[in-house]
Length: 165
Image (cartoon, rainbow, N blue to C red; front, side):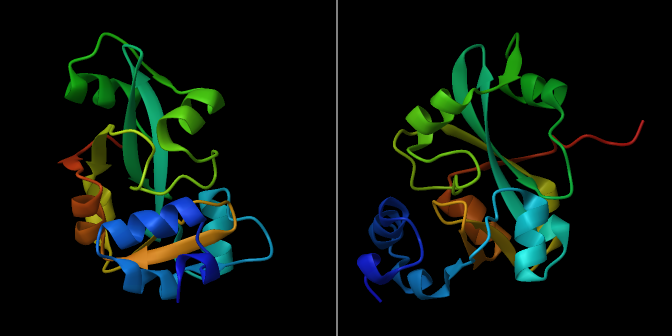
């Protein structure tokens, strides 16, 4: 299957080829309804919410950083701040997300971005054999072993999810 025949966004399909992951294009699933949220994606796929890999952009002292988090968890901004030795961490605005990644919120994949960004990957992703991530559009996802996904994203394994208080 070529990039133009893929259900992935053309930019993401090209990124897969550049990473030597062209065979993954055939595994991209497209859904008629949006899979913009982790809940929507898990329902469409028929998997556990925690098997969804969210790709979230934050600003650490104004510098974009990507956090990969399982779909059932929330990011603890204080833990991200500590990991990055930053004074302040906030959720990035939609225009910053698009400028940094080349994708709209709800379709941001874990790699293949417009700019090189520091990546933190929460350890909770490793609780599964396979996780599902956005393939560049809010309607498409792909499966991958979490360790492989984190490796291709050049992610640093961390513990940045909120815990019960």
